[in-house]
Amino acid sequence: MQKIIFTLFLAILFLNACQESGNTKTAKVERAVSNSTSIKRIPGLPPIYERFEDLAPIFEQYNDTTYVINFWSTWCAPCVKELPYFEALTEKYATQNVKVILVSLDFPKQLETKLKPFLKENNLQSTVLVLTDPDANSWVDKVNPAWSGAIPATVVYKGDTNKFYEKAFESFAELEGIITPFL
Image (tube, rainbow, N blue to C red; front, side):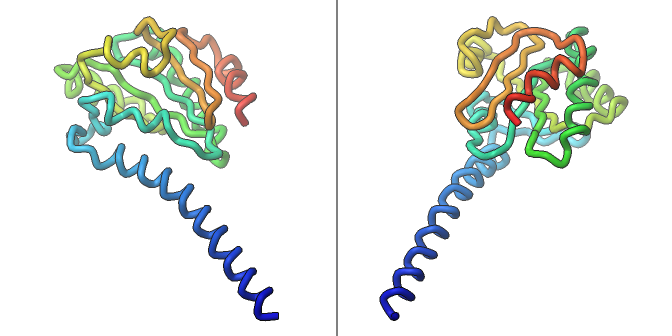
């Protein structure tokens, strides 16, 4: 009887260790993104990533969440036109494992004058991050080798499965249709 209890005890410890290991990896990635020293904080603006390497962990979340990462800018008319579809996605899937991240590529000199007022006026509910890394040639391929660097561009992934779209979505139904297979 003691052998059975001891074996069960070891099995529980092993399962607990495995679960904590998976959670630790996700927690480490989230800490790496939020604690980087190259992230600027300016009141009224989302976190500003000066280096792509600090933002890269958002593409390395291995859990049961579907990530929808859209690259956009306030000066890009097709980007602004499709933002309501991403917001509708955030609202519709708020109780499910879907996370919409809007990565602004606005110019650093226009963050206060263009992006800040835009965000205040539109009250975006999706997670917004800013990337100001000027060396796009060094990081565009890391997002997706097929990306020319034009925006809007969207990555949808869950675990090891991902899709890339270098286009503007014409409707909410079109955008929702690309995430449905990931759910």
